[in-house]
Length: 316
Picture: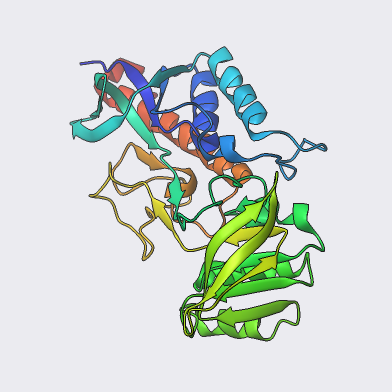
């Protein structure tokens, strides 16, 4: 039996759309399933200035519109639906969606990860206007500014150290009396003259007019609340990789799916790309590269299947 598609990509962020472009350009029947709109987390980026080839900052939604159009121009199809589960029988995968089952030779999972939020007043309102969850993405916009970092794990300490290279006025708060980060990372933060550490602190509210202007902080040991002027707030309290569709795959300690360098999972024909994948660096540029690699490897896997299914096509 021949499936409806060669590649089904679940998730329409940069990794998914890059995979769609490379898959369709290779003349493979390619479908992207996205439950909201193509773009993913990119739609939340106000100005992206670190993608190669764009000397001027580009709006996240403009960038994703171009990626979407480019993939469609190569022949990729896009479907708005929710993927509910993945099954496989022999060489054919079936993605069960809110719009019914769809079959393919291969599946590329690009479902991303959701940042944990504080759910405090002002956080959502000022997202992209001083509130960020990515220092590498948005830190350069606040060079020399007063920056608040929230969190106590490895990511918070790493990102605070990065931001301290951009500004001499970084404040790192954590709700407990000690960091839960690795000792070497915590010591690096404590020894950085550009970082002021305030333990036993929580962020209660973010205020401002059109952008972040001040914050309300609370001491957890005394209950005292106070306001302080601030230009930016970076929140690093963890992320939740969206792995619900692949509970059977290997994960790392943080819950991200483990693959090899070819984006292959332990299940042949199933590839993992973007923020849902276990990787030391998560950026739009790396996500796009992962999508391209996955589509290329998927094409080779499909060639192998067709060679076995149709012996007359196998090269001698």
